[in-house]
Length: 548
Image (cartoon, rainbow, N blue to C red; front, side):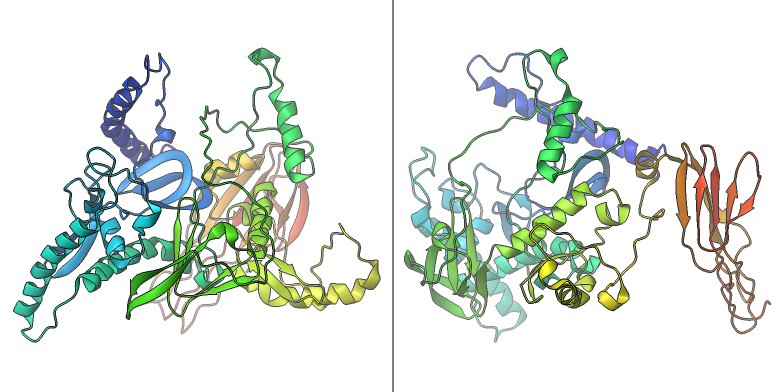
């Protein structure tokens, strides 16, 4: 597909931003001793980053829309959120506004001692959720000062006069808002701005947020990186190394499948000692409280204990309010909430991630139509990562049935595959063309050519109006393959109502060189040779009412 509009918009974004970014990078490179030579550090659209503050899911896509502009480039599925620690705080037309303007890295928020404007970081400092004791003296023009709490409070007091004057003008009996109430109001606006895209990624797709975990850190792509083994590029067998790495990571080989090189990239890696991997151990003792701070919440000030993340083990539950701090982030547990430290949820999520990465089915890989969970010796649910939570209702029954059926014959490493209704089976395994699959992905993943895709004209019934037509698809196969078709409405036509005509029944045909047209019926499995064409006619819609 040409997709002229997205490609044109992508080219426009590239034309606008590439010169600006190149100018920035030139200044960046010039600060190094002797520069960086002739190294080209930016030359591809897929390396373009338009926002700093973003919400990311562990999925990739080839097209996205940012600020109204469609961008076609391989990228992670990122929802941009124009809200962050540097977002400006404004009171305009009687409303609290956060962003999209930013104070930037310079002059930065007011508390950074550079005579700036109020930002989200300043609001958190007023509320106590930013703790100056845990910040080094790196602020101010000479980078030798602490966070300036006094300057931030003075700016909020100036803003409070403006806000309270407006409120009095609207309602003489309105109660003045304190500095803390104003700061909390701005943070609530910022939180709502952040929550909106989270809802789009979860609730709007039928995923219940209370059963999911928000990972507050970055991620990586799903490709297997094959490293160069020696300096002689011509002496590297990347295919052999890829197969070795794949088997090492997933424990099996994909037989008779070609390796597809999707991208070639050069990546620089920086090493830090701020966060280090560690084994999470179980604990039963109460955790050590490092210090206690006062934090302002909806109902006022609370004395709040601070815990170090490295001192917490799984099996521990912390009631709110509480502060959990690690090397570079802070988690605030609000009153009437609790934080549970567990390692099981992470295991279930990794199970789902591995399943998605290794599977071939579009249902699994792209629609994420699966669920993963851990169960105890009695078959009871311990932890789940609900990708499609509807599956989980029957999984405990399935596990218990299998435990009873196999008894002592189950051993470590055994794998059970079950779908029998009497054994707790809950679904079907289907292979077919999903409407969510784009043409490019469909033809790239399967040995097919989508020969035709359009409306099946006049397949809708006639009535007071014209019933909607069905679709016609013709798929040509490039090599011998076994095809299964499992459609509906091939026997009974979609009924019309109140005098309206029925829609046309769906039909499936196999078109070959020897036999021009073979009727396949409703559900069938056939062997198709190369150049064979599968024609699928989906049923039209029945119509309502007598024709005029």
